[in-house]
Every structure is written in C-alpha cells, then in structure tokens.
Length: 94
Image 1 (cartoon, rainbow, N blue to C red):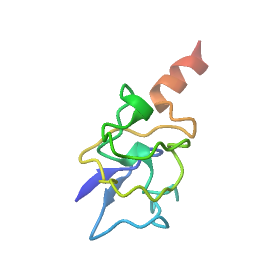
Image 2: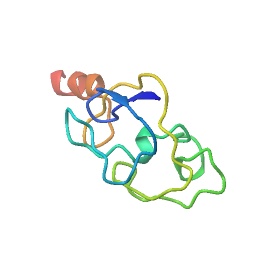
Image 3: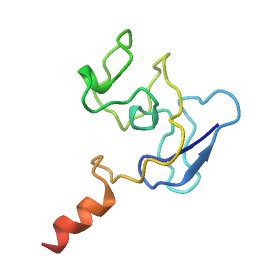
C-alpha cells in the first residue's frame, strides 16, 4: 500500500498495520493522521467522509481512529499548517 506524506510529499510504503508511532522517514511527521487518511475530506462534516468516526480536532497529529486507511497515490506535501507548499510560496512571493 503506497501513499504520500501530507507534510513533505514523500512516498509512504505501508507493510501491514500503521501504528500511531509510525513516522515518515523523510520529515518525521506522523503517518497515522487525518491528512494521510483516505477518508479525509475537507468538505465533509468534521472533515471526515466516514460518518461513524469520532471527530478529531488536530488533523496533523497522530490518532487512534479505527477507520484510518492510508490514502493511495500522491496528495502533495503540505506545510505544518496544512497549507500546500506551492500556495504558501505564492503568498510569500506577493
């Protein structure tokens, strides 16, 4: 199962269950976070497409959600505030 890190965009290869303590080898961000989950949806209630999931306040912090599934493919790296790096760069360049 392959996905990408929400923070730096590095490829994540998951072999087996992803635990709360697993981190990205490139930037050390936690992997089991809402931003890396296939159910993450910024437009859904509580930003989660799984209606049975408990709300998570901090989407970039490790959690114990039973519904976590690593999102497949590349989502692009985001900064620590969850803002895509290219958007952050455009804003700084203004």
